[in-house]
Image 1: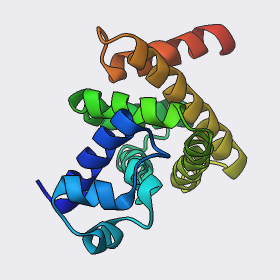
Image 2: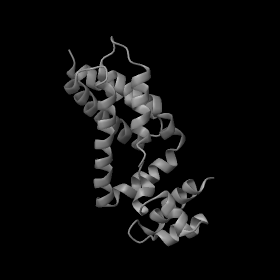
Image 3: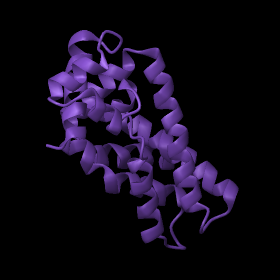
Length: 181
């Protein structure tokens, strides 16, 4: 396991056990078996441990959009399919994802940061879509796709029976059947 992954695992354990506010960087580094200096080479602060600062999720969806563009496919469906394409990460890391969600939901500052991360995700998807579609349509599709993802994610958290991809397609189908022509 790389030092970044060790730090993430140690932080999650401490955040669950002691709470986010009561956990120090020194404790995280110590539990991970690394120095504080190593911690700060990987993260700018302890909240960074919980967030995708490289926007890997957005880049994954954007790459799918770029690689699977089809003039016949509507941009919202293309973006939702992009989320489906990266959903295996969530399923294969379910316990870690659930722990992260629990930590974020217990802290208003982390909830705010999660909302800001959503805006970065919308921008990544919108920029990718706008290479092929009208800018306004791209932004609208990106916003709807992220909301579909969030609703599917919440359903996935509550129901371990269905994989995230299934939840995404179910929510998209609900949207399509309820609001489309």
